[in-house]
Image (cartoon, rainbow, N blue to C red; front, side, top):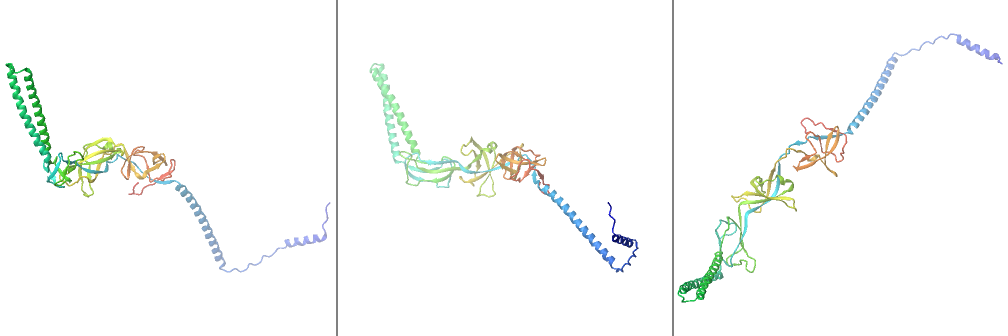
Length: 413
């Protein structure tokens, strides 16, 4: 059921409709100043610049973030320096300590008892073989020799008489003037006399030889390095006590130099080599040696090979007992390579080096040979084409991504 609107509402509606239908005259625009347009343009320009700055800042921040991400990813890969192993190991100079010794070194003893009558050479004197060094006075020995010679003369006389008797009995036996027993006794006495003469002659020869030891001679050419006796000293040749050393001699025209070579280098040591020899007392001067022999055995205690290097010392410049440095030149091996010492990694499982392969580091086991100080010889495990990492990090492991550093022009790779 529809409701009929009230008369007041109808009047209000009619009034509103009239107002709408009545045209409204537009208001006359107000007068604007001339500089308003310029201000508007300035505001628009500032807004544009501000917007461009905001856009440019956002763009730069976006690019910086992308660059930072790229740099972070790149920095995550280690940059390493590499080198290639050098083929054909160079000759190695092996320097070992040594000590000079006289070629012949001997003490001089007396062979007879007595008193020292005189000596002729003191320490430092150079003597020739056969020169008289000292004389010993032996009165007791001289008396024994005189008695032995007298006994020999007695034996000779008795033997001569026995010979005559034996000859006579042999003649008488032909005429049956003596018995066969008498002839045999005479012949036996003659034979015994001959044996006595031989014994006496041997005793005389022995004592005469002992008497010859009253004079002490140099047994070889050399230098007197010690004199341990003086005039009037009692000389004991060893009878009833230890013999006393009269002199000490050393032959120094050629010096022996003994060197202990480590077992690892023993295969490269050969007789006939000519190592150089230096001494601290002669800086800058080199002496030539000749390797003459080795003991052909490795010492169990020191694991070394004993070698003898002889030095010509006819000018007497070098002294026995001097400390020397012997420089052996060991030939290099053609089938090996060398790498710097700062490429080595000492790990629990053994010696390793880092090698770059396909952008990753690989730890390779190697076997080293000679040590050159700043370089080492590699017997197995590397080739000349390998890229070996220099100064590797202790934390380097196999499979780590690495990037090879490009050396600057003129720099070392």
